[in-house]
Image (cartoon, rainbow, N blue to C red; front, side, top):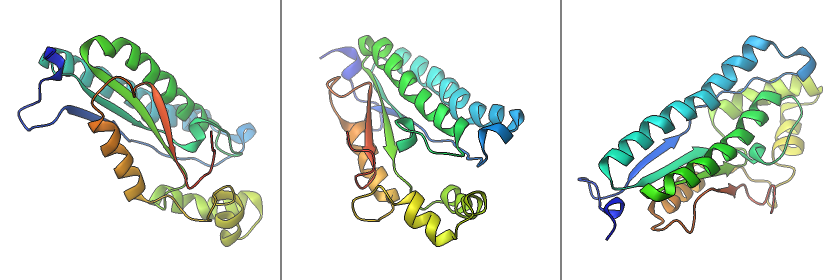
Length: 190
């Protein structure tokens, strides 16, 4: 068995889940540069720094591991009022692909989980902000913006995302690396 396939002391492979994120709603022409930089620092710089540290530890331990990035459906497509968020989420796919190629020889896999809208404080904060920017009711933001493209009008749940993370973290080979998995009730079918 290759050295990178050895199990860690706690019984599983090492896993990093890069999940930090914020959202700022604004038209691009009005977007403040300091907000752009703050969002990029949290999403992209944070993912880079945690990845670098995790990869160093995984390589030193010689048992491989899994790096998961929390992307979004916005890792694949754009929405108005979210220029830096969409840009950052697209960037996570590129980072995962590089990690998959560079980490393969050490048994390190990297993938991106791309949920649709999950009813979290980050999403709850966006509802009134988008209602104001778009001039529609909060109920219409949910129905015609957030859930319009789903097959069932349902939010993605934290359990949906967690099950996907467990599946990807436990996947035993490089057959599933450098990929983005959309978990969205059918929004952005590929």
